[in-house]
Image 1 (cartoon, one colour):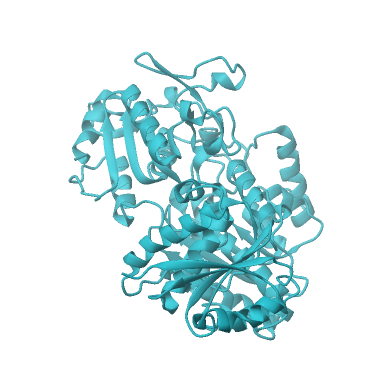
Image 2 (image 1 turned 90 degrees about the vertical axis):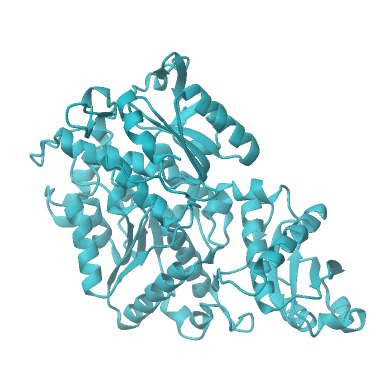
Length: 571
């Protein structure tokens, strides 16, 4: 049985010149290597390590790195090395100890012969590097960090790779012709829309800063874009990512702050865009469906700003203008990432506007649909199953393999199970619909949720609640978890949804819904929202909550008839 070994060598010209004498495979064998100093790291793969080190010694950025570790294995091939290289880059980015110097050229999450065996060996290689203090925590702990989950260093799946190629082709074609462009990326929860956004920001920044082609791997998916001509088209390129939700925006700012070539100032609110006196070359909008129409905003200041922005951009505060119009007015190129079924408030972008964006992009061949499920290990069928269930239909129970989909009769027992999963895997949380008032917002000693004497408190912070101290004892709302991944979610379906005993239908109970913005009429636009209208939003909320978890979803339903109605769906 073959085994790997890790050679640690000084990184300087004198030592590199002797590499061929030290080990023949340093000049003619596939290897993976790690260059590092106390603050920075670079990961690569090559068939000629000695020659590759000489290239790195000529690089202004990497010549000052201090040591190199070369991973040797008798069974390594190109595919295995690319896979290990990609894994280590992602883990270094997620661990946060080092600034990762690699750029995005495009690694696709491709299969190859005996990949499972190699991946088991990769775990051992990681542990060996960890013993050498290159990592500060284990793989599971790294995978639970927002730095890992929101990192631009991803191996794209086939859907994402095809979408990325299509986006780049259109963007560079329009840049060459000085034309504007609008692109739409559509996908259900967990299909990787945010991955596309962050990856593209990093990739375009790397292309803009590329000065030579010696560092290129011709097998990389996007290596052609690093050739002459593309960087020139991006010279002085101003880009930003627009994130409507406060919680996700704060997390992305942390990631951008730690990623070379990105900056926290690139992460924008819609108001940042509207108020700016300088337009952007490219704006990428994540969760486009959460942009606002002309409706009552969260504060008087935002209401004033909304009108002022409309006057600034369009000459008058027209009721027809939405924040999507701000994006178009303030950018030459824009990419909208969306899923209409994740709209959760009446003030969100109207379904009509989302449909028009999608239809227009489709007509121009600029619509990309993501279908492959990246989050929920139960697969894409689970997403559809949840939506059918929330409509009140009675689909036959489904076997989702290793994915745990359980219904609980006791909230305390479900909380106990979530605690146990959190001890085992981390990132396991209780979440709920906004079916109880948020008393603890003004009184931190108050309890918000009471179900048969079992009492809980809403999230005590909206920024990065999932990773906050005490989160395991709190309940997160839709506004703290949309856009995030959990390992396990304990979803409390509150009394805002119940089963009508006369009709057998799932109905919305307005008296048990406490998100004021979630049911606020829009007198400015002359819109009043019926219980049936609000039922659609609340269904969307629960669909989002039920599709947050990678490994399993636990469910407790407060309404006894509704719980009995849904019970048939659980094996």
